[in-house]
Image 1 (spheres, rainbow, N blue to C red):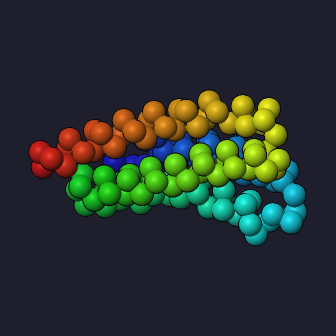
Image 2 (cartoon, helix red, strand yellow):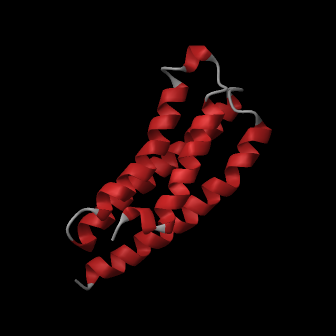
Length: 121
């Protein structure tokens, strides 16, 4: 399946774009620290969905979705940390939450679907 057709990929892509927008406002001193880490985690979510969809069989795809899920958890944790450190304004974080929640639901659902497919293939 083409990754561009997957709702989880579309949602992760939209979240990544928003993460890049938000982090562009962070302190320049964090360019190679927190900003880079948050951006890498967001990009990893979307990239691993795409890479996994290109692999042979549902088991391989599920493995990449697990990696994507781990990157998603890392991203969520880093956004909390960035808020605590004062880099991410709570109002801006609130704007990211619908994107984050959608990715979480869709990615979780896709992982469950692929786990069932891998079990019966």
